[in-house]
Image 1 (tube, rainbow, N blue to C red):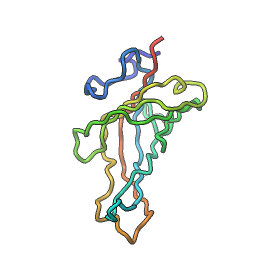
Image 2 (image 1 turned 60 degrees about the horizontal axis):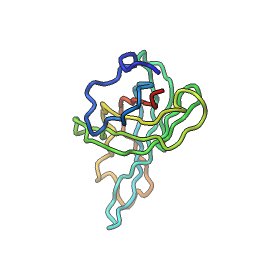
Image 3 (image 1 turned 60 degrees about the vertical axis):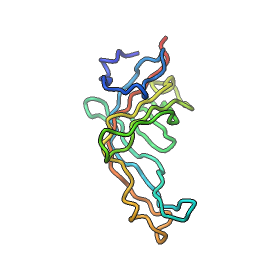
Image 4 (image 1 turned 30 degrees about the horizontal axis):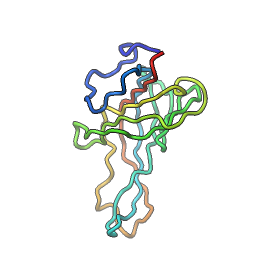
Amino acid sequence: MLAAASVGFAADIPATLQVPNGEKPVLRAHASGWQIYVCGTEADGKPKWTLKGPDADLKDAKGDIIGHHSAGPTWKYKDGSEVTGKAVAHLDSPDPGSIPWLLLTATGHSGTGTFASVTSIQRLHTQGGQPPAATECDASKPGHEARSRYTADYYFYAAAK
């Protein structure tokens, strides 16, 4: 396990997004990429953008690519290990044009390595990623995809040993 300071963990984590007691930081990664949305309809027939998933590179503090973030949501580390999660808490970003900050809990793993023991993930410091304007999704574009550029910091935790 790495000490929080050694992986650059944030000091500004809101209480609603804190990981459970007994978890220690494993890795911090900066994501840069896209949130992908699909044009569909709501129950009342109105057009609506729905999140398909992210497509982002994970980078270390030096800017080197160390993994990938994709639909699931899933994070794959360069050692081949993967973790899939589901959101258990969210908080609107301080930047109104950005996607929410999240706390996710691990729901699945594959491979051995860094992400094999991850239990919680935080998405913080988001920039961008909101869906396009509702007017860009209409009945003439069902299934149309749109990409919205975003960045975020992801913090990965595992049970303390």
